[in-house]
Length: 373
Image 1 (cartoon, helix red, strand yellow):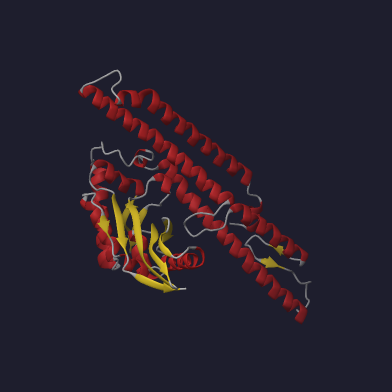
Image 2: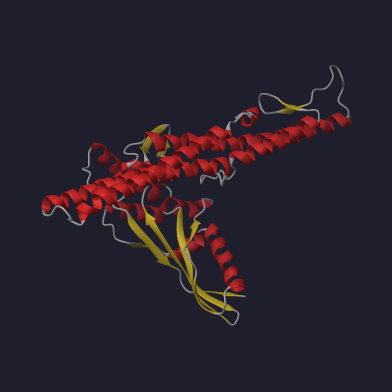
């Protein structure tokens, strides 16, 4: 992205779109509530209708309500995504700069560049031209070094803008253009019948499992995917000690909680609230869990007494593949220029709906640990 293009961004137009989608979400939530109170609930309570036909109608109406709520969820998630991009936390793909802050930093840097008598050319390079036929002096060489430092800052900001642009390029088609965009939001919908595309996606996911295990050595990720594909829906216990030892972001979160427990909690038993954490993606150990869980919730349970905290860490997550409101990109794998796997996340979610796979709960608990304070 060109440096000047960041200055020209109409963030107000993007904010208007975010506000509009938030309004759609509120409208759909009201519609779901009205449908439930006026139609679904009375039929479900058999106030006016009884028998097998009434039971079937109640089931159908409940599914309709869930689908309306699914549309509301997607619209709300899109509004939140845009808000985060505009002025919040960025996105969950490593772009932690929002457009408002980015544009302000660009404006401030441009003032610095202009005050130094320089400008940004079309390839994002900062230059200060010397007079014709003049040999650079030591001072001029210093100016050249200053221009190079400016150029690095310009390209860093442009790179951050490119990251946001790529994220939106990936996310918006997921929102508006994938298979069964809203239908797969309704995780309770299991009334579909598997078709050729579903069986193809199932086979490709079996290939993903093999690649995770044999090609990369990501055994935990492969085990979790296999459990999903087996379709039992039974809860799955992970080795939380391995998760903790492998993932530095998780370790940092637990350490921060221990510091708070040491400074803020009275002595005695404690249970912290469920809090979000993530695996990280640095190195194979973290990537194993990134492809297996990515993010998850955890809490600390234990006792604080006489300068020692004795505790264990509990972990939980709902294992499901990407639905549109989660804005996860396609699953792709290419070797030697050949596209071996290309599956939309919503197609994987569809496997749950048609009964070829099943979402499930993940849980685990570390062994007992101690920390002094």
